[in-house]
Amino acid sequence: MALPDHSGTRVAYVAEATYGVTPATPSFKTFRTTRASGLSTRKTTAVSDEIRADRNVVDEAQLGQDASGDYPVELSYGSFDDFLEALLMGAWTTNVLKNGIARKSFTVEETRELGATDSFSRFTGVMVNRGEFSVNAREKALCTFGLMGQKEALVSAIVTGATYAAASTEPMMTAASVASLSIAGVAGPPIKSLSFSVTNTLRVRPLVGSLYSDEFGAGECNVTGSFSAYFAAGLYQMVLDHGGGELVFTIGATANKKYTFRMPNTVFLDGTVPAGGKTDDVMLNVPFRAKLDVASACSIQITRAVA
Image 1 (cartoon, rainbow, N blue to C red):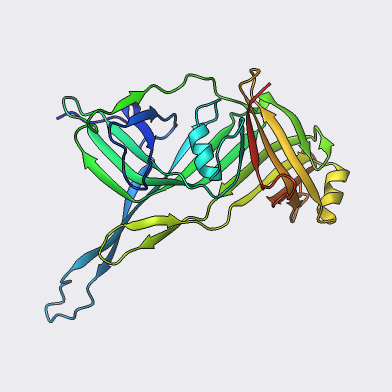
Image 2: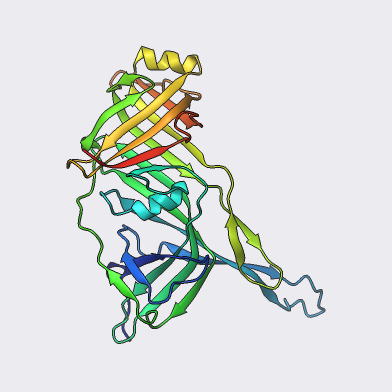
């Protein structure tokens, strides 16, 4: 019997026109990730409370099933535009994407190589609940997409007529390729690390007569983050003043293959100057929230194909 290796796992996805329904003859796209088997099914069960003289448990019933999981990725140009669109619930318009209310779901398929007959975990009704981005000095630019799915089917064959487009081979982005960084009007602040997340606060909608959720409900679009900077009095004063402003940076090493991430209206939260010893730098750690900017009509905006 052939035993599978994670190194041979293929992760692929296709957009759904109808929530929870894989398109006929789907054109899957191979997904670039550093983790195979990111999605998995979680069962909800209940143990019987029946009292028996022989002290045995009479049953444990299945109440429901949901799928969820994370796919960490190394950021590269053009590789995750569909997932960024689903994360922000918006649409790329002249290469600009803003957070909005347009829902997008996928069928995500994990293929495990078993020799003559492969095994396919096919997750339908998958939505992007969370995106966590990190850009740390002398490291790769990373993101983790947190997904929620309606159900999983384990099958031994592809969908009839399915095709699989190869993943791109664009190089991964790094913190060294960050340019035009500006925080609250301070150009080129001495930043050591920057992270932020976008969370859609998705929730399941259980149904009587089904193990599975209806299409997930969505809460607020929460955009929060933090940065660690070498101490600068001007930035710290903004923390004390409960100030903030635009946070924007461009990432990418090749012209027209760069992204600009922009949060036009941030507010600084409870920033701190960590204690340190005589061989430590004085640092400033600042959490922030991005809120609605009326002029931009969004909390976060991504522009692609930046020169």
